[in-house]
Image 1 (cartoon, rainbow, N blue to C red):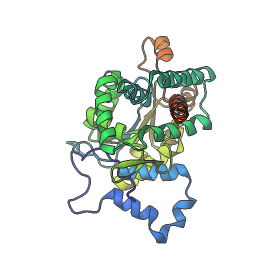
Image 2: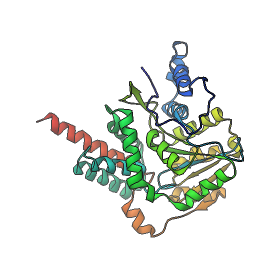
Image 3: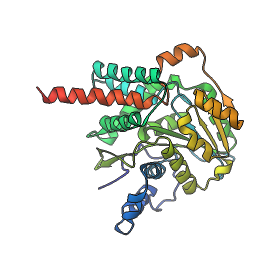
Image 4: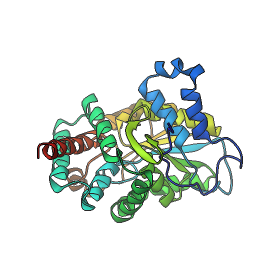
Amino acid sequence: MSLLRGRLQEPGAASIEPGAEDPVDYAYQALWAPGAWMKPLRKDRAALAGEASAAAAKVESAPPPIPDPAAGAFFDVDNTLMRGASIYYFARGLAARKMFGPMDLARMAWGQACYRMRGAENADHIDAAREAALAFVAGHRVSDIVSLCEEIYDDTMADRIWEGTRELAQRHLEAGQRVWLVTASPVELAGIIASRLGLTGALGTVAESVDGVYTGRLIGGLLHGDAKAAAVEALAAREGLDLARCSAYSDSANDLPMLRLVGHPTVVNPDAELRAEARANHWPVHDFRSGRKATLIALPTAAGAGAVAGGIVAGLALRRRHAAGR
């Protein structure tokens, strides 16, 4: 079995020397070698998801002209870098390509509306998001999903990037620091966003694949909450980053584990809980939203991605049951 094979594309500048051992293969051996079998079983899912994401992370751009190798920046995607939830736009792109129907998309939107009314995310939403991520890719070829991600980003996501957040990322690049995206969305999609924006690379949810086809299983689970912090920590160890000198950016209190991990946390377009946390800790706050009321009604947020995905997976499940009953 080949774990962690569903990777996007070759990096612009490889982070390992020619002939050096592939870090993804190394992670696979470390996690699943017989002599180490019991140790990963005792790890919680967040740690395993974080380690898998760090192992799968690719360097998408060349080293900065004035290297500052010990410092870096980590950016959440949904509602921090991009208006709304990237998984929602991905799903909408799949619907436009007839991979599932308008009723499935409507159920997804209803799940998002329910989240907005409740105003909080819970474990059920996270589990639903995990199932939805599996439903998206199971049985599909990795290369096909990568091509779809590229098309969908160009068609529906590129014009939804917050310019203010992009400028923050650019400042880190100009200072010679590396910049990574960190998101619960599939690592394939995350890597394409990073590549299109000229960032260093991306951490995202890693799906298992065998012979170039997704199996329908995730490595560890969704990259969310504690798993994001675990991924950042594992990547920092791999890349030689000093977390005390690193920065992190997010809109959601769900990302507090990642924000607290670095020396320079910053909040962007924050939810109420994160705004209060930033005020209590004197963290910088940037709010790039304009026409805020309309945006909040029309677009899902990062915290709502679980409900969005939950609506998707519910729709897919109903569709499968309907097909089976024919």
